[in-house]
Amino acid sequence: MTPLEHEDILASLQQTLGTESLFRTLSNFDAVASLGTGTIIFDSDRNADDELSRDLQAVALARTLGLQSIDRARKRFPEVEGVGDPGRTAYVRAYLDAMAHINQCRAALKTNPDAELTLGMYAGSVAMERLVHTMFSAHLLYQLRLRIEADAVARLALEQIAWSVAVAGCNSRDEIDLKQPQRSISALKRLVENPHPGRLYSYLSGAAHAGIARHHTIFDVDDKGRGVIRHGVTDWAGSAQIMMMLADLWVIAYESVQRSHLSRTVSTVSEAPFGADPQRPFLAEIERVTDMVRNLEAGGD
Figure 1 (tube, rainbow, N blue to C red):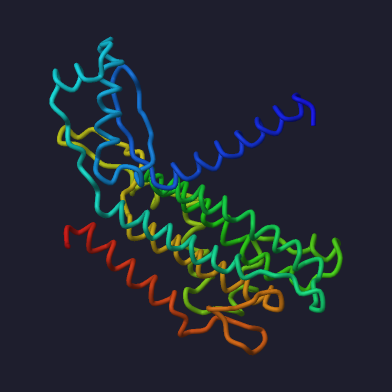
Figure 2 (cartoon, rainbow, N blue to C red):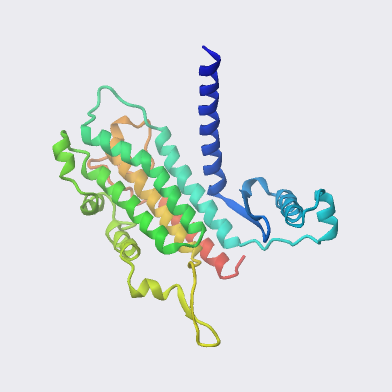
């Protein structure tokens, strides 16, 4: 290996690690803001004792004020304690639990050379793997309280889940091309009744085709009668419920289509067409977590 080839490999590895680190940070981020410095985003998981946020706050103040010493910034200005949002924290935990549910299913995949593997099953599997990033995008928007935009991305994820089921029996590219994602929800409805894919799709479509009802959620009038347009809506319980429902449907669809290539299943019954098990544990988990987040939003313990 030449030095140039070695440098290319290191650069590629560094880029990959940097991207993965960025995804991890944005999965559960916090921020320190300063008028002169801007906003520093960091990984909340690394801030259990608030030491990181205090250090970054001192860095931002020192930079803004042109101080050479971070310690001087700490001494001159009292610390501003951050105000945590229990509802948001619980929402992030719900998202991480949802992705863990998906990843456990992905880890069970082991191609069986003796089992059927249609072109449609392969195409659907590719789409489902890509959906991990689609769901991350929705999660990031939910964290920013951009509920309309997040719901629109969640709708895209639901369409892709349904499409993976619809194309599973296709054996040619022409057959696959005839299956349109936005018309594939019925294929998913045949596998699961709760959460109902049709009702969820209808709700999420309200964001993709936002009308006056959705715009009312971000519009208000202040004490002087002036219109105020908020950037987003705080609904951590609703956001958690949608992300967990998508994870539930992802696993059901994947287990149903890829069953012969999975070492274990947790959410579907053992008879064809391998639909959702109404007693699957994750369904109860969705209800439990949604109620917990809603209680925290309401100021409960």
